Amino acid sequence: MERLQLHILRNLILSISNIHIAYEDKTTKPDHPFSFGITLNYTTNTEWEPMVSKEESPIVYKLGELNALSIYWNSDIKSRSELSQENIVDILQAKIVKNEQTSSNSMTYILQPLNINIKLKMATTPREQDYVRPVFDAKIDVHRINLNINRNQYCDLLDLFEFQDHLNSQSKFIKYYAMIENNATDKPSLRR
Image (cartoon, rainbow, N blue to C red; front, side, top):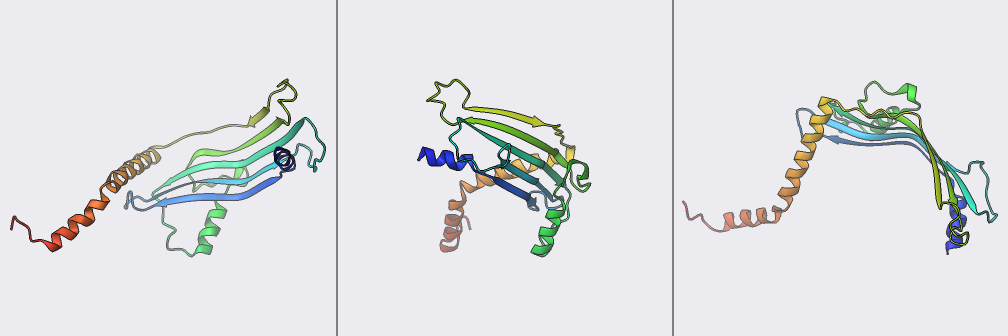
């Protein structure tokens, strides 16, 4: 089984593109709705030299790349919930950054779009080689990382955490609300 897993890993090529995961909240602050999300232009995972490997080499070489990964938080937004699904998909796709120079002006980024390259060497049989080389050896190149959060994002984040905390504490007692409502309709109050 281990040999099959290694053969699959050795020949694995994964490519994901145009990812936009968004959350829109109109409940926490009804007069100031906000949205946040993650966008990714593409990711790849291929051999350093693209090829199908059948030989039993002691090291597997993999290259990973994340292009234009970003995290955003927009305050005081116009809700997309009334739009058709096709329009929503078009809007979300248009907001995916294709390269670092074309970041959207309508997005307020917490993590500015960044590119990451990873070169990974994996020892296929480290035990048989008495762990002479590391099991994993990774070289990670990040061009630049820009993290920033403004006052509106910070306030929205605190309000969201406070609202979630309220919902969590309320959920502990939700089963008792039904009992109170049933008892109130069945029995007259003693205080009347």
